[in-house]
Length: 391
Length: 90
Image 1 (cartoon, rainbow over the protein chains, first blue to last red):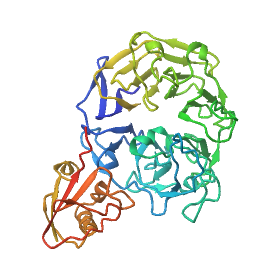
Image 2 (image 1 turned 30 degrees about the vertical axis):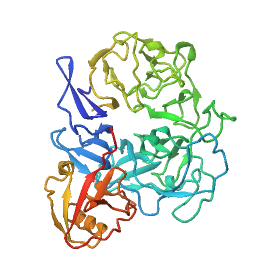
Image 3 (image 1 turned 60 degrees about the vertical axis):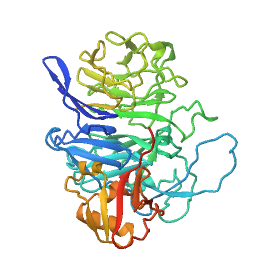
Image 4 (image 1 turned 45 degrees about the vertical axis):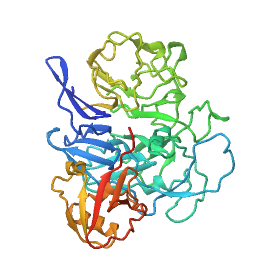
């Protein structure tokens, strides 16, 4: 079982070690820098952090000596000619038909990192704003934009070659607005452990796409999804996944915390079923974690949403299902039950073995050693936490 | 040729970075030469389209450069050039 938790925070990277039953942070790395995501490559132990530097632009940083020293990696960049169809935040009074305009892509943020299969050491994937999937085959020395996904018909076709040949279906995400843009982003990448050529990605705001040929072609995987904010809730596109992940030991089980509830697929995202239950306040939230082996077991940290996006009634709780979402149990022991204003971001919940942990925007880190049933606070004056991963 | 002064914040990423003379007829030439000397530095100053990053300022003398898109501002002989992070308030 993992003895270290890796945090990406608003003020740096924290490694939190378990020692004698207590979780203790090491001195902060990347002090003062916003880290949007941090994770350890299980194949070679390299720790990766996505620096979201306000002045100098997004960069990756990696440590090959367990966090003792770090090297920045500056070569993740959009190729010349990578364009996207410009979108505009809906603004009152400007509801007029605009001409299609294009913008040259520049990296705004590395939102998530995912590691390739056990049989492809050095393969790392990065999901970015604006809406890119990058892959490195050499341990991060060089990165290539996945052009099949970038040029997908759901976003206008091949804009390297010319003007749009289809309608753009990828909406912008509010997560981009902080950068002065309204663009889509890729925040979830799930590489099938049985076949690393089969990869799911989730896009805010469009939905889920899958490749089964190592990224050469992509298909939408949104059948059964329900977007309550569209005239046709079952539309092919326009869905708002907040996070998508799978069960490593049973990867046909894929889970999705969506803006419109919790969804589960038992056929590798071919079809989805909404399984959240408003009666027990399990509906809105950002992250979701799945058990290592039991595909029917998942955890969420619900928020009252989407009008408040805060702990429900000021009471922080975790919900777990062990039957594929048919029923949910909620757990509160060790979590604050009044005046809790914590928000848990999409990458800030993880599960490994019997341990579950999550971090919050108010700098609290909670760890459970009994599958989410009781919790201990492992730090409550930490910076706002963007990502939490067992390392 | 310009005498280039850097914010010390860049030394965190490029410890050997030091103020000094850098050849170039335009700001872009200077940034290209700096990239040759300190691989990766350009990506801290401009994005991949060549635009000056939103929260970075380059001054020639006491004037901010006019061409933030392509860094085409000409540099007079012995000009002083400053690469600084922008103060964006707060």
